[in-house]
Amino acid sequence: MKIHIVSDLHREFGYNDFNLRVADVLVLAGDIDLGVKGIHWLKSLSLDIPIIYVLGNHEYYKGAYPKTLFKIQDAASNSNIHVLENESLEIDHVCFHGCTLWTDFSLNGNPAVYGSLCQNRMNDYKKIRLGDNYAKLRSIDTFKIHQTSRQWLEKSLSTSQAKHDIVVTHHAPSIQSLPTKYLDDPISAAYVSDMEDFIVKYQPSYWIHGHVHTPVNYKIGSTEIICNPHGYINEAYNGFNNNLIIEI
Image (cartoon, rainbow, N blue to C red; front, side, top):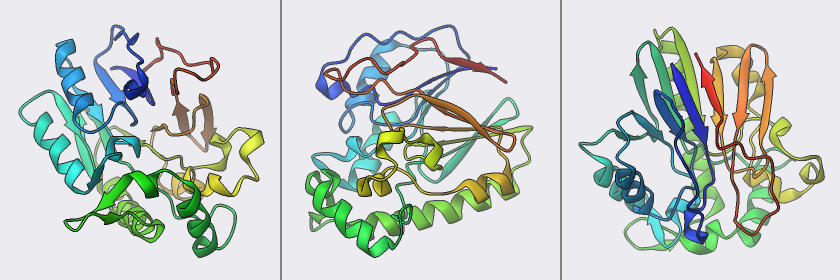
């Protein structure tokens, strides 16, 4: 199986140069476009392969959690686009386990302290609403979503009977995904959770993520961690590989 991996295309800022390479599955690890626009774009490509799509934080901008998730899932229904949020999908003995994941804000210390810092500085908590009353999303909300996703992922991996397991998230599972210049940045707690022990315990074949606008490829135990983000169109070239394909 050939799997084409990309994330963070940020089409809401005008990026439109993406071309699918010869692959059996396309994996999108979030921040493709706002709301349902990513689904409409994918449908316009008329790709005849399964598409695994995990939402990033930007899909929710100008929307609400979980309403935006439901709208995107509805837009993708009865198609080859599989929007995974605490869901898994097995294709030819390869099981894809998907969720946005968010973070636990514990990367640098007390999650209450760093959650508050991130809430004050991150656009997520200004541009995303919560529930039917459209109150602003808070860091405690995404902390709880992270915990729910983490518990689901643990159960999904522990019960999988697939030959290969691939985890797809938007947020990163290890500090090794951070560029050195951000290691001491308190806002990094909104990008990464320390899940290295989790990875060592369950050893999926791959963990694919986005969110961090720097490509990475490293191993934790036998698990290969991959991030292949395009980033914003006004950012300097970061090493994004439009042709990145893994074969499993």
